[in-house]
Length: 118
Image 1 (cartoon, rainbow, N blue to C red):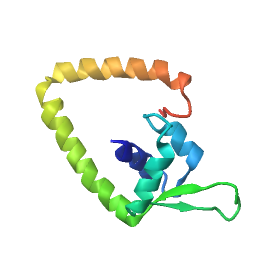
Image 2 (image 1 turned 90 degrees about the horizontal axis):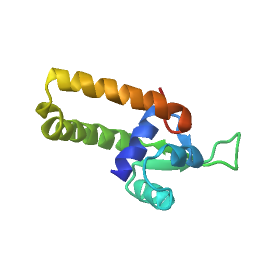
Image 3 (image 1 turned 90 degrees about the vertical axis):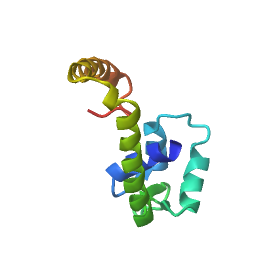
Image 4 (image 1 turned 120 degrees about the horizontal axis):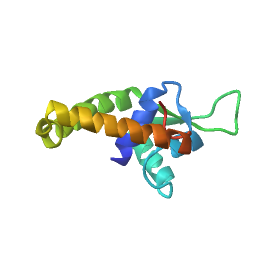
C-alpha cells in the first residue's frame, strides 16, 4: 500500500516530485519514507534525479517499469474495491456516501493544502 500511494502521486506528475513534496502527499508515516523510496528505486519503479537548475533538490521520477507496474496495480486495486466494497452498495447508498465524502473533503482541503487537492 505504501508503494501504491507513492506511485499514484508520481504518476500524476510525469516530471517527478521533489522528495519533500512527495513526503507531504503520502498518507502514511514519514518515518519510513526514505526507505520506501529506496526500495522503489531498487525495484526499478522510480529513479532519483538531480535537476540541473537546482542541484540541492532530488526529484523522484516514475520509470517506464513503474508505469507498467502502476497500471497492473490499479487494475488489481479497482477489482478489490469492486469486490469488497462497491458491489455491496445500492445506487442510493453510493449517492449518500458520495455526498458525505464531498462534505468531508470540503472541510479537510483547507486544513492540509499540501496533501489534498480538489
